[in-house]
Figure (spheres, one colour):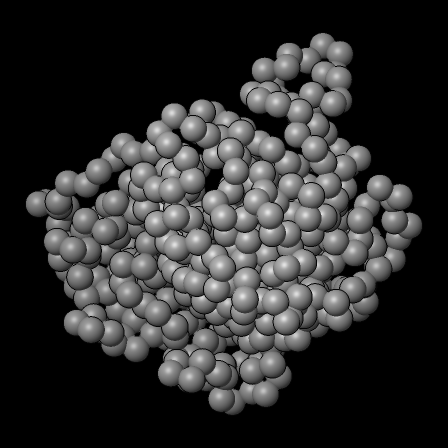
Length: 468
């Protein structure tokens, strides 16, 4: 199946500075971009990032029966984390004693790439949608390039690495008209429909405080507080480090960065906050219409480091009154021993698992993460409205949106503002103290370094994605 209107146009015609404006003018209309296939046709999906979460996404996409995997791109095609995807793709033999069913459904033998730009150059006309499961710092350029070429995009959470990247993704999504989805899968579950139903019915009302917590151990706990410089190790020959680094600052290769350790570094990841808050605070942010905070205060940081996220963090995001809703403080706790302390009335509530407490007018609710729903832990549980409990999962919903048969449940317009809130929190983790944020002009007013970190300049050679 050919992608609408782009069979003869390659990446270079779009992303070079002089051609970007003309490229966007040539994008298909919203209706054309979203209807790429009839009801019996499949969406041709390219995956960028095929190990770990990418491999899970591949399996879930294929289980829908709505797509073909037509390209696989990863900077480390020989790594252990990409092995399962390669076995399923049919070019690596099944290990002795293993059943092929363990590795997921095989659709076809798709070609491999280590650089997404070369993938678009060679196969752009054959791709309808792109699923991005790479480290946080490379979500942005891949998504911008894909949308500029009229491709639907699934972007793993958090949507991007910086506030400014999110702003550009919002504008590009609006210009391109493609279907978009952030990979917080609980947003296609009763977690979302319950919150929406109860908010509209007034069961969740006049919320003045939300406490979110995630106290599981992280990869950097222990050694992270002692880091004074980036480690340096011999790089395996099969790693494309230039593509791995993308627009972020380039440092030495280390197994403390790749594979799977990038999340702890300010330059590349978004810490525990960026990893888990999209699964815990997504419904609160959306249906309480929180928008952007006025201040973010680092109430507690343990083991702060210039390079690595703290060992423990307590943040307070202060949001002003909006529409008919009162001002609201959202608290965030991470770190193995940094547990939430509740008043005696709620002392029996278990806060050891990732989740949240929502303090409303007449009720206090407790919820978990991902697809978990809310329970009333204080106040009446009588008369709560019904809500939809069964629906297509997040991957099915995305492919339906690509086909023009549904709206995506967590599009860029929803995921980007939430990610921007988290980006402000990450700056507070990095700098400490209180950040004062001008919501109207979207700038930090009391810290010049913090203001720079809202939208740091990309590394040389990657500017084109910032000019689209």
